[in-house]
Amino acid sequence: MKSIILILLLIPCFCLSQIKTGTFYEVEILNKTLPKPVIIHIYTDWCSVCKIESFEVNKDKDLIKMINKNFYFINFEVEKTKDEIYFQGKKFGYLSNGNSGIHELVLAFSKNKSQPVYPLWIILDQNQNLIEYHEGKFSPEKLRQKLSEISALQ
Image: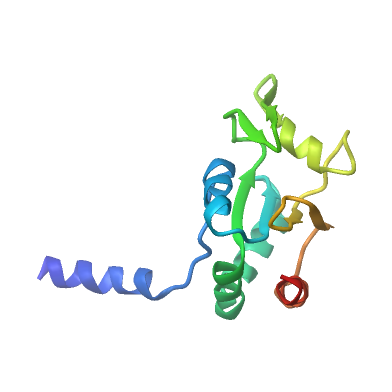
């Protein structure tokens, strides 16, 4: 009986579409064998707009399929990611500020170096050149449109 309940509880997990995410290192390795554009979604846990946006994007199955097929995706939480990241030949670390802090990489990406805007979307082509910079909420419709344009160019 317990195993039947467990199976019924797990079935929805297998049926839901999810964006396949990776780390900067994993995406760098994957991009050597199968080059694709890279989407970097920069957010913080305290950002309510980030949470709403993430919920809306993750419930759009067609958008998720498009992302998983044509792009690499990195979900980057800038205040909790404390590992050193090597990106485009440079090393970026975590800048602690007492009980909190920020990752240097977001400062490198952000146009506003003193106070980055969240969420922040960075889309790079397969050669890691910037092709889209978007501050603030990206609706699923606008994100799908932009990704369709980028996919058509690849």
